[in-house]
Picture 1 (tube, helix red, strand yellow):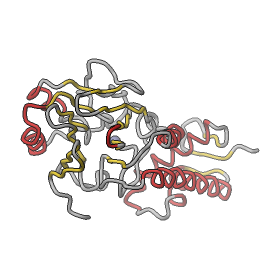
Picture 2 (cartoon, helix red, strand yellow):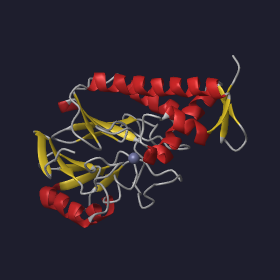
Picture 3 (cartoon, rainbow, N blue to C red):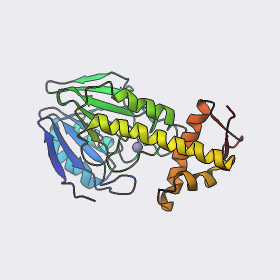
Picture 4 (cartoon, rainbow, N blue to C red):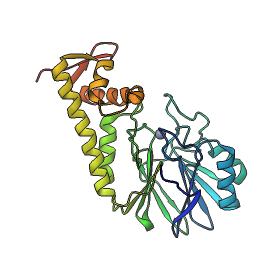
Length: 278
Ligand SMILES: [Zn+2]
């Protein structure tokens, strides 16, 4: 894993800090972005790790006016509270759904909506609703730099896990396709380095998911009727066994997409699946 410096300047409007929470799911750690110089927005404040919160406050000082969150997973939003208390900044984001793995402390005054704009003397930041990874996920488009802050919608170096019911594969693929309507120059992901060729990256991701879906269909054709446990081994045979528990979540998301499209059906408990006849 390449070393990423603690604070880097990405362009005249954006700096990045990497939280000290590296791991299988978080890559080198969560990226926290600081937007602006005189009045600063902290985008994805990150996990509640004191050194990380201190680093943000040291770098942005008393100029923090806004805290913007892509979503409310514990590696992205929980530091909002300490930073809001220290700075009085306004919280921007969408409240957590009541599903697993969410930051229940997250309380914005009002939920952000698609196409909402944060306009400051230094930059314009537009909200893009991108459900899929979770239902309350937003990307943010920095118009002056044509830079998209992608949170966990797009990662660099690892695959986004889609966890039903809030995670939704059909919505995820549609949210990827939506991004192609924006004049993207770079993607600044929640984990990993800047992506310099955004259109190719987004198209690859859509393709990658659809290829995995084809594999689900092919294996179901062979097995006829299969449990999630049987299916995950065959569909994710290219993925290390230690990740099969997480992969089962994505597999379920693929199957639910096929169910929404009337292409597959399950038993009542959702653990045995088969294709519907054409
Ligand atoms: Zn996440």
